[in-house]
Amino acid sequence: MMEYNIAVVNSNSFGQVFTEHWKELEGIGTVKRFMLRRILTANH
Image 1 (cartoon, helix red, strand yellow):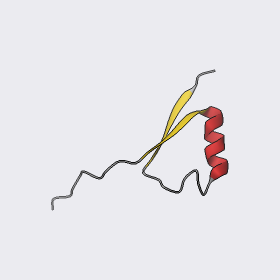
Image 2 (cartoon, rainbow, N blue to C red):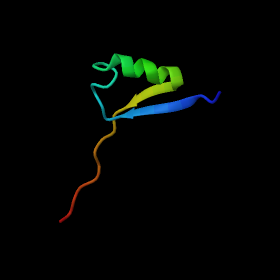
Image 3 (spheres, one colour):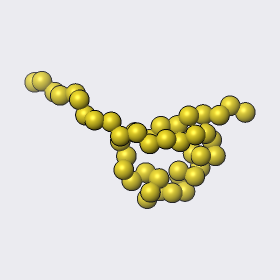
Image 4 (cartoon, rainbow, N blue to C red):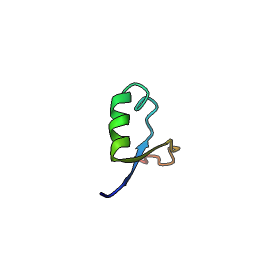
């Protein structure tokens, strides 16, 4: 069976509030949290 790498991006609460969902994802593959800086701006 293939092991997946799963990224949770820019979410402080996922896995803390929804622990059961985080555990389900761990059953599928490796789960890591990433917090990215916002670098894009809108020019209108």
